[in-house]
Amino acid sequence: MSASDRAYEHVKDGILTGRLAPSSFLTEGQVAAEVGISRTPVREALLRLQTEGMVELYPKKGALVVPATPQEGREVFEARALIEEWAASQAWPRRADAVPRLRARLADMAAAMKTGDADAFSAADRAFHEVIVEAAGNSVIARQYRHLRDRQIVIVAGNLRGDAERMTASYAQHRDLLDLLDAGTKAAFVRACRDHVSYVGTMAVSR
Image (cartoon, rainbow, N blue to C red; front, side, top):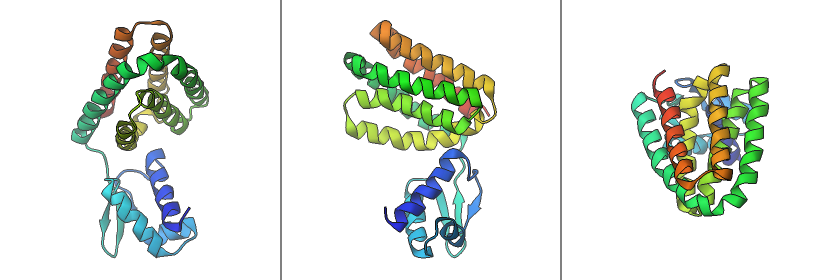
């Protein structure tokens, strides 16, 4: 991994896990010191993150972690709903392969919920849904979905952090999705996927 890639992953991980809070400011020197590299690759990494909407650069000053707005939240979840409803339908014929992978991700969510680890819970949540989207068999859509989830994690993680009740509700919905894919009907599974995205979106933009 190049120095620029290391800086990119370091900052992006900080944003997605909440280590770098929305509206926080970071400098090239700060990131360079944390990663153990020079400032030039940090600058390249921040430019890349700016194109992804993660940070906003201020010349000779540093970068601001872009906070999610209610409007962006609504738009992200509208886009996610379109993709996931389609993916749920397309994944149905491949459910025999998807169910064991989803069961493993659900176990990860349960473990994170038990310890109150919101970062791990969010990661397992994302992995759960990516199994469904990837099972649809379209790599272009799967890639776009991952970009949406990068922004969604910023929107949702703050709501989940320290909120056991919301994690419990989210876990129950994911368990129901797995049960429907394993032993339900296609129509019920597709509908449940759509309803789940609607629920998460409402919780995210209502803060």
